[in-house]
Length: 426
Image (cartoon, rainbow, N blue to C red; front, side, top):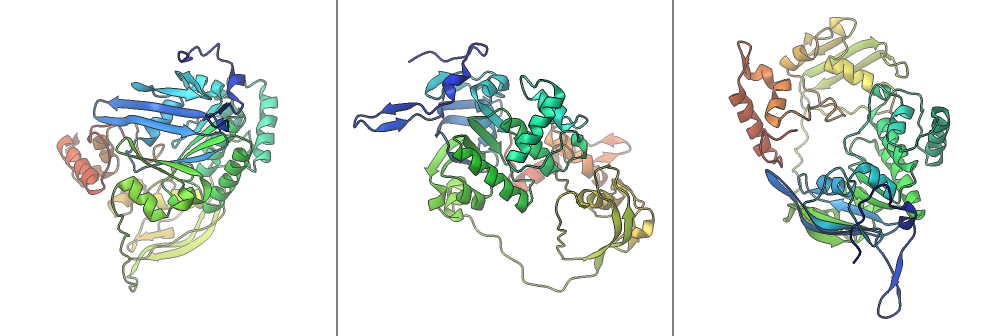
C-alpha cells in the first residue's frame, strides 16, 4: 500500500474528482468509496470521543451520520476536515491513503464543510467572508458576481454586499453553504444544518443537496431530525459512545428503530398533558412600535398580543419580517418607547433591560446558541453565571464559584449533558 499523502502543495486534486473503479473476483465493477475511514480514534483528557470508527461514503451518496449529543459525530467530521487530528487510524480519499493536516488541504482534496456553529466574521460583508474561505478568491467585483450566480443556480437568495451582522441565522447558513459550493466540492459535510432553519428553508436545502448528489457530489449529513434523515439519506452510520453501533438504510427504518440504534434502548415518548384552561395573562404587548436598527430589517408597527399562563404561543412569518426585532424587544435588548407597551405578570417592563426582566421571571433562548447564548471558551460552570448570577451565585460583589459549580452539576445531571465535567469549555 502506498504511504499516506500529506504534502498539501503537491497533491493533485484532479486525481480525486472521478469515480475510481475496480473489479471484484466475478469481474463486476466496484465503485471505490470517495471517503473511507479505518480505525479512527481520538482521545481527549476527559473522554474517548472516537473509538476505532470505520466509515465509507460513496460517490453521489447522501449518507447520514447519527448519534446522540456526545456520541462523537462532530469530532469525527472535524477529523475528516482537518480541524482535529486523529490519534489512530487511516483516512482514504478516492482509494488513496491521505493525511488531512488542515482545512486548506481538505478543500484542495474537494472536501467542504458547513459547521454547526458558523465560522463567519460579523463585521464583514458576505463577499468578504467568502473570500476568506476561498484559497484564490480573485478580484472582489468578480467574486460578488460569482456569489450571485452560484446562489441563483442553487436557489439560495444571497446579497454579497450585506454585512453578516445584519443577516438572520438562516441567511448566515446560506453564506456557509454558498462558500462551499463555489469550490465545487466532491464531499460536502453538513453538521446539524436544519437546527436553525424554518421548514421552508429546510426544504430548499434538501432540494439543493439532492441536486448536488445527482451531479456526483457526496454528502455526509448530521442531524437529530430522524424524519428528514429518512426522507433525504440513502445510508446511515450510527454512533453511540464514540463507536459505530449500527449501519442501515434509513428509508427502510422507522424513527423509533433509528432512535433505538442511537440510544441503545427503547425511547419512551413524552406524555402529553391533558388540555387545561389557560391562566391569567403573563405577557401582554400593547401597540408596540419600534424602528429596526438594521437598514435591511423590518420596523415593528402596532404589535399586539397576549400570552396566558400555561399557553404556548407561536409566531410565524417568512424570515426577515420582524421576528428578530420582536425578539430583541421582548428580551429587553432594545427598549420599547413606553413602559406600558409591554407588561410582564401585570407589571410594566417596556423600559426594563434584560437583567430587570430576567429578575421578574422572563427567560430568553437566542437562535445563535454560541454567539449569543454562551461563551464557548468559558467552562460550563462559568457560563451559569451569565444569567443565573441573581440566584445567589454572587454575594457582596464576590462570585460564589462553589454554588456555580453545584448549579452546573445539577443541570448536567438533570439533562444528561455529555461532557467531561462542568469545568469543560462550553
